[in-house]
Amino acid sequence: MKRIVCLSIAVLLAASANAAEPPSDEEQILKLEDDWVRALEKHDREGLSKILAPEFTFIEPDGTIKNWEKYLADRSSHEAETESFQNDELNVQVFGNSALASGLAKITERRHGMRYRLTLRWKELWLKNSGRWQVFASQATAVNPNWDAPFIVPE
Image 1 (tube, rainbow, N blue to C red):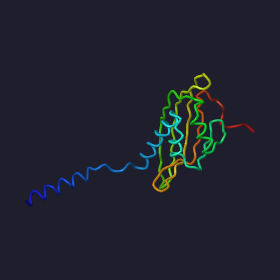
Image 2: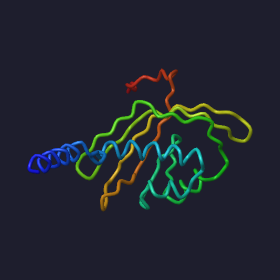
Image 3: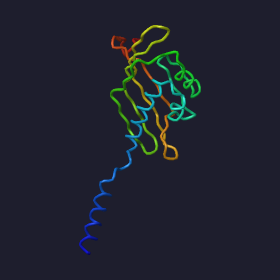
Image 4: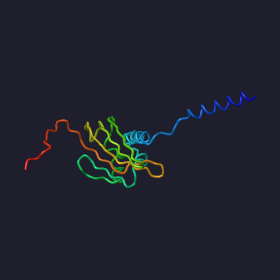
């Protein structure tokens, strides 16, 4: 009997040691980044509103600033239909209850009957509140591989 009890305890200890650990903050944010892309593809306002904090601001590639409501309205409309949206070069750095995420988005979409391909480099500020990650600020910059402007402007 003693042997059975010891064996049962050993099995329980091994099972608890192999139990899945909760995802790290970095893993949670990477999943939310993927959820964000899927919500954009589906024009899912509710899904987007869970990811974006009410204080959210977005700086568009043209420099305009959109608040939470305007961003949700634009991204949940059917003005643009996403054909593909791929995030590459994803990086997340966690600093306690805040994190910076960045990546390179390659997007193909249709607007007003025309097809567009965009490559955007983006950066986001995520904050964790009550155990839940939300993005507070995001900026996207268009990538122009033909850019040849000098960094130094002569006086």
